[in-house]
Image 1 (spheres, rainbow, N blue to C red):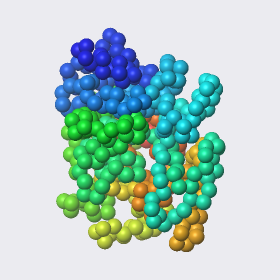
Image 2 (cartoon, rainbow, N blue to C red):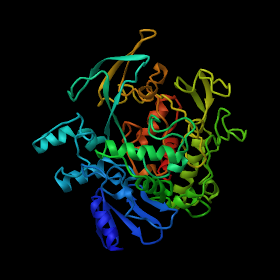
Image 3 (cartoon, helix red, strand yellow):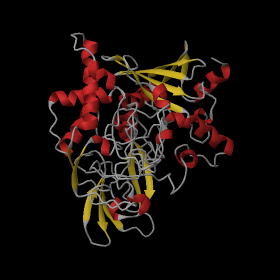
Length: 465
């Protein structure tokens, strides 16, 4: 590895030894000049691929461009699905005695500006980051908003705020961004009619200004470098501890097949927003179709592969009643299609992008993840509609903090599903510690009625993505 790349890794809070990169307590093997990184996780092995043919560790993504020691890689670790995990954050806390750049009080601490002195105080001040991998996002209530925040019940006793509000969210992966229809959980970096490069460029500058506390805007060269790095970056699970190689016997797991996956805004959209006019196909995932026909042998690997295929089939085809989803039910879309208050559908109605699993158009939804009963560890805001006087309690207003619309309270985009095994916990607020918890949430929320075996098959499939 070139000496300049070693320096870049050192700057990025990385330790390089024997051809491996230590990031967040995990070892990532860097295959020189192949454009591939390999990282172990609890389910097996994730691989990251650069379609540029090599990982340029001198890229601005790995450089210190702010004033507090943070880089893009600080919160987007290759070995953790290009985001962060509590396990990785805890390892960095222990290795650095709390001095790692991720522990900064502008947004890493529960309360803005916290100044902990002792180790106990520091663990308390950064508990949401350490336990859930959550970064604090400060947003102002938009001018002319259709709602007011009347009060906050804050378990962390931060200074009360009803206009400049703190929310706590998982950093989204910086891999597989070429499949995005909206940038950030609330879509705040995406403008109407803008291209993904424009959105990512704006996000890179905003993040450097905010998270890295930069006192200047990024140069055009720095912005283009970061966006080019991200656009060409693909990550997916490549090996499963039980099912083995995810590219064998006709399966198409791993990042290389993903990097060739066709995508455009509106592809396979279920409410007629596909610009080609093609109808919605609920069979969104086809990665493991060949495994459904494997001979039913007694060996563990064959049984595991058949379970993955069954889980994929469940994800594509198991029907249930989809109701009370703000942003979907009772909505009328731009093409005049109206979705009824409830209808029978599958997981792929909301996870429609083929072999990727996010929504192919900007479609923030509220499935109840910000309900105080779901995220009991977060502050609860009492929000009042200025039109009707209705009040609700929520842990995150979501898209409403961007649009100011009452009907957007609690709406978030669905993330890309590839590389799930590397990046627990799940959902925007880390409410599901494991994939099992995520499946349980959906099973309860939509009364799907999954059996124990069906749950296990779905988890087996999701961890291979």
